[in-house]
Image 1 (cartoon, rainbow, N blue to C red):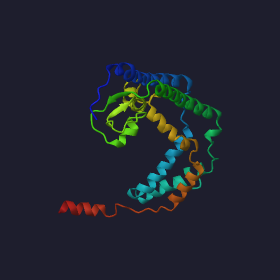
Image 2 (cartoon, rainbow, N blue to C red; image 1 turned 45 degrees about the horizontal axis):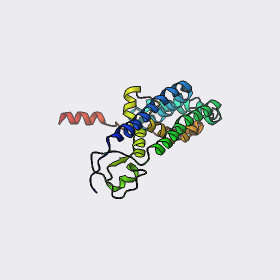
Image 3 (cartoon, rainbow, N blue to C red; image 1 turned 120 degrees about the vertical axis):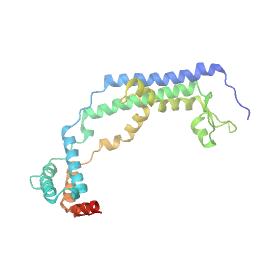
Image 4 (cartoon, rainbow, N blue to C red; image 1 turned 90 degrees about the vertical axis):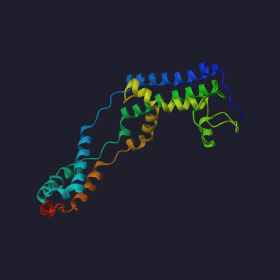
Length: 244
């Protein structure tokens, strides 16, 4: 197929408008999110529980480098009848975030802010700019890239390096992270790829790990852990190595 030559008006009426629309949508979304979302507070008990579990795991994994007396003191501090792990184990179950009305409201706001504008803008771009070729990547690609880069363009003989208008929208939608980070900072609400990752991990966040089960399993694991001094005879080895 002969090399295509795009009309310069496509750059003015298709390429740049899609880029600016996607970029401005991210800016507006960021500032609207700051206005309607409440600031998230960190639960001190949750941080304390995680640090306690981490301390126990570190003791199990690296206790062999601590003298036996020090290992036993730390172990008793954690798993004795008055130990930290036993106290936390006897606490009530963690509250389910899904029963918190404020959490449900925040999730609904997030869905409205993320999905509805994306569908509206994507539908409008698909209706207004469908069928245009906007640009070409400066390196050759295989035919496997055609479904991704040439949506709404059904030409088998067209080079896979050409990018359609709809695909250009999705590339901008997911690829402006560096620009948003430069203008808005790292922790911004305009990053669409980060938003999709948060939605994928939302189910796991909605159903957190039961602290009682976590502390119980950690108590059992630490109880079965015996101290093995890993530095046995290290002084003699060091002296002999220096002597040689």
